[in-house]
Image 1: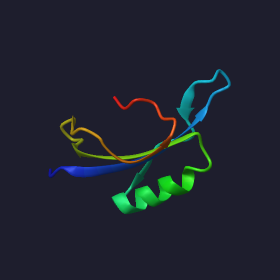
Image 2: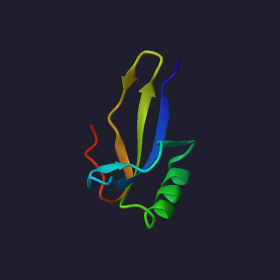
Image 3: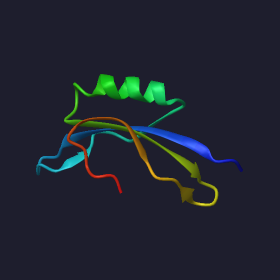
Image 4: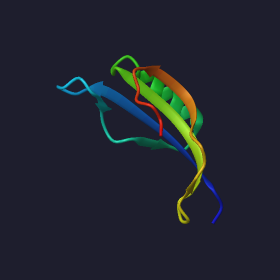
Length: 79
């Protein structure tokens, strides 16, 4: 199977304990442009927003390094 391009947007809020936590499940997009538009819209509603992409071959468990497309506010370090 050919590699696929994963394009993901995540938003973050603070928990009651003050930790940075995902505001909801990560959203996957078909294009980087759509992901960046969505991330930009979410930026004013959450303490942090991150859009990133990576090449992947999920059937064999291989994932390339993530590339940040959009970042705003407080986000956790990418692993």
